[in-house]
Image (cartoon, rainbow, N blue to C red; front, top):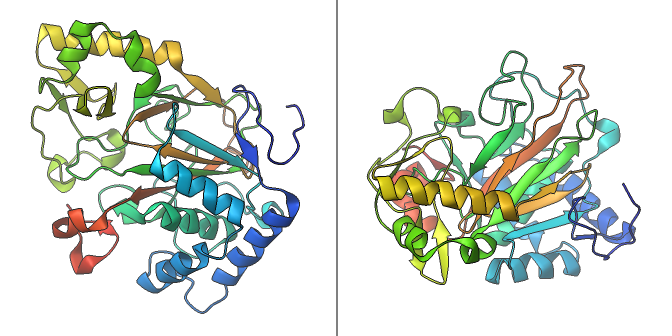
Amino acid sequence: MPETTPGTIRSSAVAADWALDPADAGACEQLARTLCTRGHDQVDSPEWVAQARDAWEELPLRLRLEVRRFRRHSGPRGTLVIGGLPVDQAALPATPSVPGSVQRRATVSAAVLTMVACGLGEPLAYRAEKSGALVQDVVPVPGQESFHGNAGSVPLSFHTENGFHPHPPDYVVFLCLRADHDQIAGMRVTGIRQALPLLTPAGREALFAPEFITTPPPSFGPDPAATGSDVQPRPVLSGAFEDPDIRMAQLVTAPLTPRAAAALTEFGRACETTARTLRLTPGDLVVIDNRVTVHGRTAFHPRYDGADRWLQRTYVSTDLRRSRDHRPQDGHVLAR
């Protein structure tokens, strides 16, 4: 991977759009460590989230400006990638290798993720997925290589997160703690702002029609009743005709009509044509605008030796109030 200087743009074959300089990275790390030692060290507790929300205002100005600009408009790709975030590599334990792995106790990486989430909106989780943890591990799990989700290592098809749910996240934030051994795992991303010009008028019209069913992904388990899903026919695209939102997962979105099937295939081709691959390195943080962007993953080869690929993930809502009826005690976890 070629070297870059802080603040420079790197090519789409590598990850970050820009990187923190050492001084700003050090300030981030110091603030994250402070969050880990203030008495409340449970990531999911309201007190800890409140501290992270306040700490966001103390992060370096450049970081806060870039995140706020992205929140106002996520640009042609709907993705922001920032390098040089602290993850405390020297103190990292072995990469988790058990199903449903999450982070409950405060760490530097969990603090960084939560502070950025609070800069975008409010962190969010779903009780039926990863036991409702706000910071979740994305790691390969032995025996689940072919699982079509975050525990697998086969290719992961394009999707928005939790499009089946009445309240999908507005943003998904990933932080890379470890790359895979062979450095071939890639996060694939593309957005509707790139794909839309490639669609035919008929295809675009069909994608705006409520002729698709999206069901919960495998990561939500086998019981649809526990997911909060309201599986009703809905469109893949909605909102402004010239800049629509997306709800789609190639694995679990089913067309209900022949024209819907043709349009979904056409949209998939447009995504393949416009996608770029991000090969993340430790300290790379990816913010995905889940309303206008789909993402997936290339295949890779885990070794289950404690040094496998390790990302951490959190979801973000820009308006937590709209899901109030799904969140007991006005917490951050959607119970249904």
